Length: 297
Ligand code: BTN
Image (cartoon, rainbow, N blue to C red):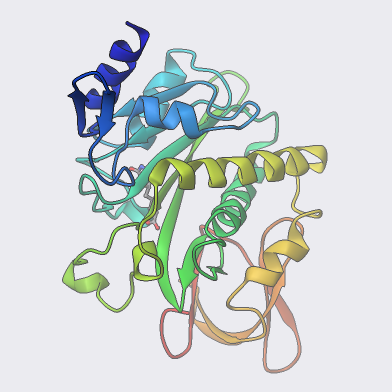
């Protein structure tokens, strides 16, 4: 009876399962594409992040859903996952194309006890976690502040959104949304040559295992971050992955673009850019973006 219940649930999650006479159940095909609540629950081994887990076959946006759940009182560490998003959100008001059966889309809901001006550092913490989480598949890099790249192309984007409590102006909650390109796919024209997927480097990626790898990393890094509410203990690991490190960058400052050499991050997350005269400037994420002088990286 127990086996039958489990088999029914697995079928609902998308497994092709057949009952064979006197032999129990037979799993028919490649399980790497299967994605669903049961699969996620069996693969996630974190201590507290994702213990409260919501899975949707389709949702507008995992960030939006995480915010709605936060308003209803969902706990710190809640994770929202979807197979497909109809209104995936990217940075700077852009959309994030989110087809079904192809990629990983998830959001972590946090209720950190830090000042609102420190929240942007958590995007860098997540970038580090994603980079380490995909390291067994391909050699990752981070394009400051939070794009994950492989071979100079973007494989993951991160969008952090914060809600303040009306009375105190302190953080009520923040959501960190992550989109990882997993399956080989035809990217929209404007992303061709600029985006890449993990399965261009390996055969099959199980999205639940990938999520677990990222969340386990994030859990450890987040706990380190919380001890001082800064990136001092993570800075060296972050700098080691920074593709801009020691390279020429163009700072797209609305007050005037300038070029310099990236010299790593401050413990508070700003990018240090050395100007031709040797002076350095701290570049704040959110205010300006940075790109290589010959292209994206
Ligand atoms: C970027 O523009 O680089 C950030 C993209 C972030 C996309 C992810 S997908 C999961 C989560 N839900 C969203 O609506 N957006 C983020």
